Length: 295
Image (cartoon, rainbow, N blue to C red):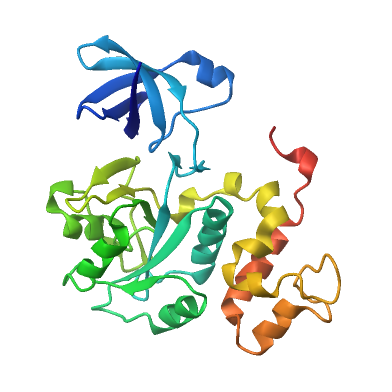
């Protein structure tokens, strides 16, 4: 058996990079479907080679984490690309995505693109205060690209963000060999066309490994599950110092008297917009029941 990692998945085929520098074109065994599993880009797998660069994925090795949509695994950090220019990013989308990442033991980096058009002062203020590594860049001028390469070095990172915000443009700027298709932003609608249709892993000369994934719309209800409901306060990292300090056990941090989190919001120690996102997620998750979740 040969071990490797899935670098690309497309139309039922898995492209597995091996330690020998080969890329094997593989199908997955039917047993995965029976077990309710699917190989994902980023998975380390065991492959039975058939010759002529082909093979079958026989085993998925233990994962650090896995996301359903986008379908990726073993991510070190999620790079959320946002913008203060058209299309302007809704902070709730950042907060929802970062909460899912925190639940899955995945770091988050916030990348504010189009700095040449808008410095995104409010987003920068909110997320630096919340403790996120936050970097202003411009895919157009190259500003911030050297700092971004340092943040990516030695890690497997997945890029995501609202459509039209410039994920593919940033990757092309990092390394023109990517030659990713770049979409235009509709001035009438204030959003971009989706140009990333599948997930693929790329390597930079500095050893960084990165994925360009579909946009925020892919983070759908599958990730808003019972587990997130149970651990929602901990996924807002700046809440953590205040958890356990509330007057009442089981405090929901929504409206209770003696809530340490609400007190921190009132004193500006937690950003108001972050707590508003928490409340919105809390309400979205509230109807979920444990027995309704897929086994």
